[in-house]
Length: 431
Image (cartoon, rainbow, N blue to C red; front, side, top):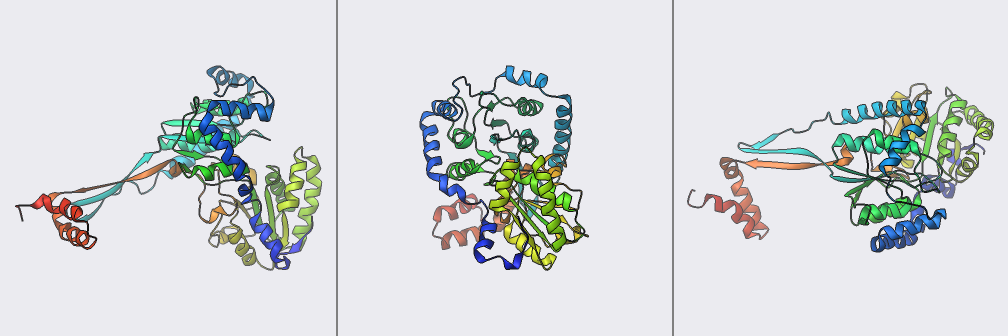
């Protein structure tokens, strides 16, 4: 690890940092297509075969049973239960606040014509909860709580099981807290395929939510041919902007926190202070050996890491807006003053004490965020993603009469006589 000046990056290196691991799903698309077609044709049989292939265990049932859910409470430490409940409270508070918007507003466009919108939850949603190298009950809460508050009638959870075919009890406990019973022990592209097409055990859904690895991301993008998805959320990333007031210990800790997600995570630091950059690297070298996850952190820093000095905060913000990071931390003297200049970011963390982990777990903000530059066009996950607005309109007889001539004129121009007649026929013999 070494510091460089951002302006000294070669075009090739600049593009490598901007691209990070985004787009690598294309390399696995052929494999994912085969998996999805296999699940579409063979259903449960394909899911069982993939579990055996990846785990070497034949003792496996796809759906989590009531007995497994009941056991979870006895297997989880009381402190963990308290933590989940606090997360539940804060996430739910943020989600409920999202519904306090300008809804059900009725506009009268003409005398006797009213137009408005009504909220409807998506009836069947699928939540993909990643597993693999870690346990993520937080991701379950981040996806399931807004789904419940939105009013989704049927919530399906798919999550990779451990090699013994079981789900970690903390994940089960989080699901039990929310009253979700349809939990399936399936991960990877095959889980996405199961929720798209349905199998003998797993029902199909209308929209899929949740982040995953490259294979999951590729499967979600392929799924767009048939259903909706929240966003193509892939490997985690953090982008930190600082001035000389930032604490290198805090910066290092947050970079390491993101790097431990996986070898394809991206960690970027831009600072106006050479001293801060160098001391951050020193801090990383001190903190890294203490982590059990250090091997994958090292690889992520080598592949997609950047420690760069900039001439000004405006230079850092310009690069950040092009990068469009999942997590953007601003540790400067007056971080609030910079927020207005940020156009592309999933979730913004202000100040020295808004740690990377605060937003991941307990502030109530959602941690399902756009990655790989997708923050340029996708928002963070929220209640609104679990429903849609239905448009409603009503005309009185006098109201329709006010727009009758416009309807007839445009329908005639577009050579659609039945459209003209649908208005005209209501006034035959009257006008």
